[in-house]
Length: 221
Image 1 (cartoon, rainbow, N blue to C red):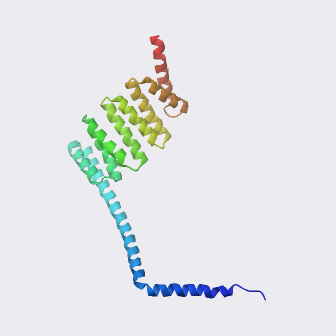
Image 2: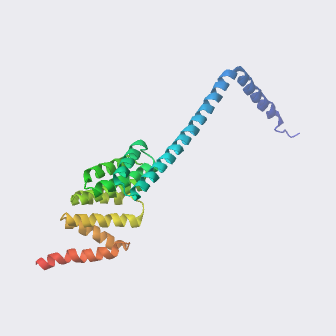
Image 3: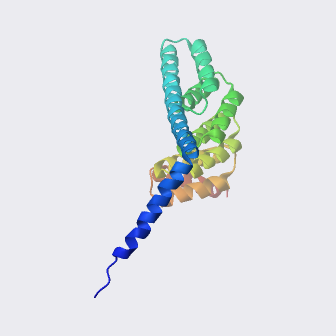
C-alpha cells in the first residue's frame, strides 16, 4: 500500500504546540517586545509628522518673505530670509531662501557673503540638483567679484554634478566664458570644442567662439 505524507502532520502540530508553549512561558518578554515595536512605529510616525510640519512652516515663512520682497521692503525681506535659512536648515524652503538671499547679497556687492552661503548649501544638501545650482551660484558670485578663474572652476563643478544634458551644456558654456575672461584660452577652447561636437543647445555659440579664438592668433601673425 502506498504511503502518504500524513505522518508528517504530527511534527507540524508538535512545533506549533512548542511555539505556543514558549509564548506562554515568555509572555512578559513578548509583551515588552510588542511595546518596543509600537514605540518605534510611533516614533517614526511622529518624526515624519514633525518633518512635514517643519517643511510646511518653512514654506509659509518663505512665502511671507517673498511677499515682503514684492512690497519693496528689501531690508526686512533679507532679515526674514536669514532667519528662515538658520531656523529651517535642511528643508526645501530653506534651500530656496538661500538662493534668494545670495542674490540679495550679490546685489549689494557682498559677494563673499553670498558665496559662503551657497558653498554651505552645496556641501550640506543631499540633492544633486540643488548642489549643482548652488555651485552655479557660487560661480556667479566669483564672476561678479571679478575672480573669473575661480568662477570657471565652480561652473565646471556644477556641470559635473547635474544629470541634465542641457543644463550641463549651459554650465560648461559659462565656464568657457569665464576662462576666456581670465585669459585662459586653452581651457576655453577645449570646452567650446566639446560643446560644438555635442550638437546641444550651446553648439551654435560654441562654433562662433571657436571661430573667434582660432582667428585671433592668425590676426596677430
